[in-house]
Image 1: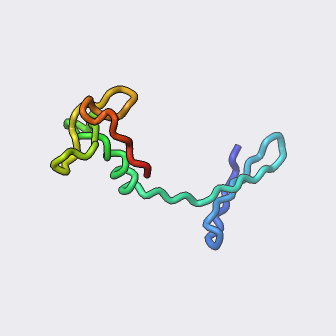
Image 2: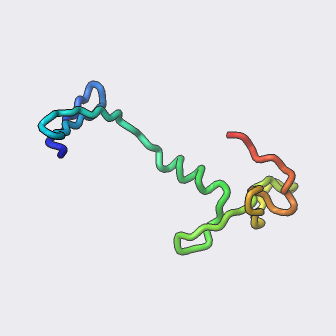
Length: 91
């Protein structure tokens, strides 16, 4: 049972006090900051919105005209028939 927790601002940490069989245990948790805007941008790089919050995967390789390829990719390669030999960029 978690009886109480302590927040220590100078360390930006939380400590939980847990009592198990009349013994107190303390758990230390670091503060985690997640940038959801950046996460969404990266997640959508190889997807195209099809409405109602649904998405489909796209090839995403750069075409000769400079645009992203919107063809359906093969299952494991991540690229379409045209760009199947093009290497994926390393982030």
